[in-house]
Every structure is written in structure tokens, then in C-alpha cells.
Image (cartoon, rainbow, N blue to C red; front, side, top):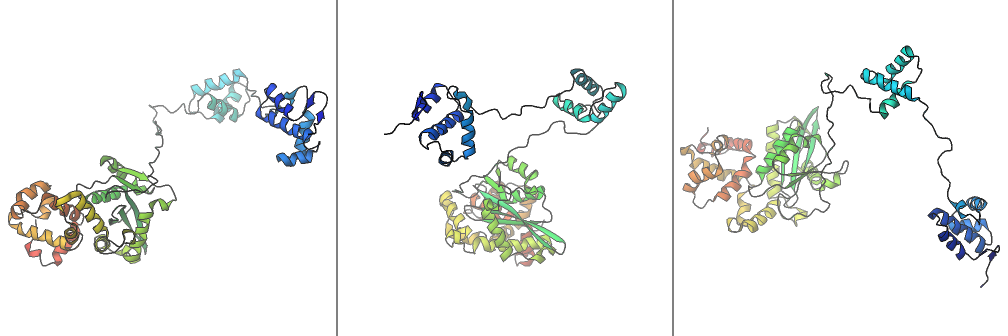
Length: 433
């Protein structure tokens, strides 16, 4: 093997590494020493070949060679990149103290006024920007903000709270564990209607309700209806919404009061709300029309209610293996409640128009006792009292759990029940309060 000698004191490229360790060089200086070692030993003093090997320009290699001193390897250390002549503040100390004194004496004066006073009364010519820099350095900008000041300002600036984000994995094992909520806007002839939709990620049960304006109070009202939509033993654990204003303030406070976790999707990221976004397209395609914006809210909600009955109890779903949301929900209910419910029987009794007929029959039989559905709702009589006083005496097999289940599913459609009573042949059985 041929050995190249560089002078009488250096032989071979390994000596360069040993010298780097000996002189305790920085990583950048060791890298430059490695490049110079390659230049002398491997490339036969060819700067272009050395530059191609290390990905450097040959001028860079030559610049390092010019400063290289074999007797002082610290010459390879990178030089400081700071400018040689830096800006030095030239404001004299007595002028700075005068600016501070005037600002404390007149806290409401701006930097321009302080600079003018210095020139007028003290003969000190100084720019307003210099006064502003002094204010900023010594924190004198907002001296006028005092609690006793008549000026309105934020005395305590609240730190922006970080929004909760939903889990990345959509794994649900029970109804009510994860719900997504969103709003659909119907616009026609200068009129707008806002339809708030919600979907349960486990059973795909949906609920929709129309409002005239997208306020957070209406969103809170929808959340209360959503709670009544599920039976008492199915608790809503988490709701996921976008960053719309209707899902803030009163809606967020209601979630805190009800111990419901409220999570937000990222801005301009509708894929995070994929389930409810899909239903938004479905209900606009199969139910809603543009002219519905001109319809009365009660009539529109009746139309939406009829569609929800079809969607939840009749329409097959590809994601549920062509089952209905009610089939999935009733199957879970049967496994969780055991002997209380039969899935085949639940499907016939809930989410169809027969649910109203069953209630009307009970109300009609209890009409002589003045205990009907509307009396129960307006007088705030508990379901347990109503069940023990009236229902249990007439229907011993009609358990409290079954009654609560029927009651909660029907309560959100009170105005629709009224319309149904007027059109049905059961109206003569109902005792009207």
C-alpha cells in the first residue's frame, strides 16, 4: 500500500482524526479537517474531486485550505457570523430617566406628546420612536390602565383554552358513547332554516330538528331533546362538533352541566366528522327541499320526524350489513337489559306510528282519572309516580323500564303528537287539559 507523506510531520489521513481529538475541535472543525485530509491523501490535491465527494463547491474547499495552519488547527473553527459593527443604543441615561419621569407623571400621554414636551420645555431633541422603545423596555405603555379608571378595558385577559380533540380511533362499544352533531342550512328566496343533526356512531340512530336561527341556545335545546331521545339508562358520554358558533357558550355550558365531553374537530377538516357529514348529504338528498325554507317550522319538523321514523326503523344501511339503526339498538338493548326486552318485540313497538297509538290508548283509559300524557309533562309528575299510580294498576306487565323507554322516545315529539291526535280516531279518548 502506497503511503502519501505531507511534509515531515504528517503521514496518512488517520493522523488528521487523531489531531482533531487531540486539539478538542468542534464538530464543524473536525469535518473541515476530514475534508482537508481527503484533499491531501485521496484526491491528489484535486479540489473539484474533493468537493464532489463531500457535496461541496471547490471554492469552499479552497477557502478552508487558505486558512488551514498545520501548527494551529483552531484556524478551522468557523468564525462568528455576527456583524462586526453592531447597533449601539446612544440614548444618554439622563434622557432615559427624564422620559420615565414624564411618563409616570402623565401616564395617558403618548410617545409623541412626551417627545414634544422634552423639546419644548427641556430643549431635548429626541424622536418619538426612542420614547416608545423606552416605554416598552420599562413596561410603561399601559400605565393608564388602573382599576379605578372610568375607561372600559379588559382588566384580566383570559388565556385561550385549548380545545379538546376527539380520539383518533373511532372505537365505540355502546350507544351514546360517541355522537357527532352538525348543522345544515336551507336557503331559498331570502329565507334561511337551520337543521341541527346528530348521529350515534354505534347504532347510527339519528335525530334532526329545525330552527330559525343558529344560536347556542337553540343548540342547547337540541342537546336536551337529544338526551330525551335515548332512554334514561343510555347516557350520552361524548359529542363531537365543528367550530361553529352555535356549539359554543350555552351549548358548551350545558355539556359541562350534564357531564358530557365536548370535543371539536380541526378547522377546515370535515373528514373528522365523516359520519354526520354523510348524513347531512343523505337528509338533503332524500328529505329536504329548498322550498322548505319557506315552510313553517312546526310543519318542517313534522316532515323531518316522518323521515326519521323511516330512516331509523325501515331504511337498510350498508354500514350495518343492511340492518336498520333500530335493529342494532334494540339488539344491544336486549343484551344489556336481559329479560326486560325482546329485540323482535321492540322493533314493532318503537319508532313507528304505533308508538303514538299505544300511548293514546293508555292515556284514553286513564282519562277518567285526569292523568294523561300532557298532564304528566306540564305538572312535572315523575314517571315513577305516574307508573305506580295509574299504569301499574291497569297494566301489571307494563314495567317501569318499558314505560320510561316509551316516554323518553315520545317526549321530543310533543307537538307532533298533538297534530296526530287531531287527525286520528283516538282524539275522543284523550282528556284534554
